[in-house]
Image (cartoon, rainbow, N blue to C red; front, side):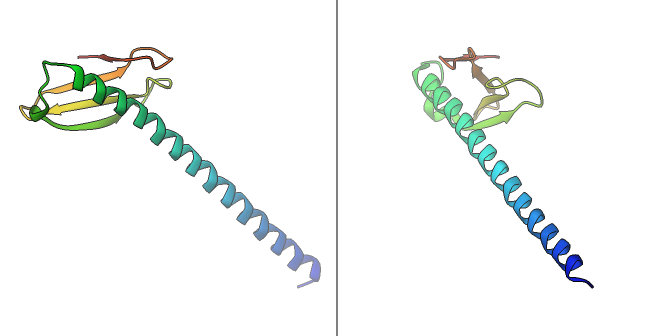
Length: 105
């Protein structure tokens, strides 16, 4: 092959590598933002449940994050509080400014 062909193959490989790194950084940053958003909602729900006298700590089995297939941030995540008796209580943000959470069932 000619020098020009080697140069083009090398340049193409370099551009693909740079593009791959850019895509990986984008998804890493996006994953970090998702974790932050879920953590904020989880923290607010834990505080809300802790202040709710009708839910005893020993009756809680787990808290889980549910991701919606649709919805706009911050309403695209809910938190489910699963109780030992099989009951599930759902919470979401009460407003776009994230000033509080609402029980939705």
